[in-house]
Amino acid sequence: MIKHVVMWEFKDQAAGNTKEENIELAAEKLCSLKDLVEQIKFLEVGKNINQSGAAYELVLITEFESSADLDQYQIHPEHEKVKTFIGEVAAKRVLVDYEK
Image (cartoon, rainbow, N blue to C red):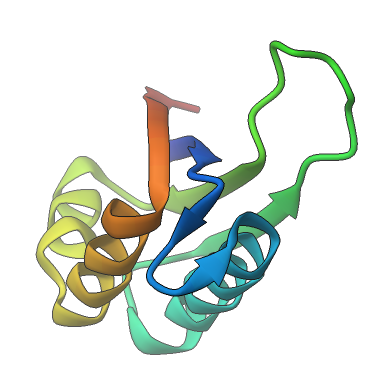
């Protein structure tokens, strides 16, 4: 099992939306991937509630059966659409992939 965890910070204003609007849109788009990408075995999206300056604003946690499945997810057209949107509105991204 492979866990794929990504966290983002968002721009104050981007794509004609406020930061809060873009966080909500990104969360919705990410959640939609569960029904669109068969390789995803588990998907969870969370909006930050921690007020620490070290906290990121949105997190994606996904699980895949194998590294090959994660690779297929990375190039899936629906994932590419979401990635393009988030790339426009996010200011910073960090990630970790690990075997569980």
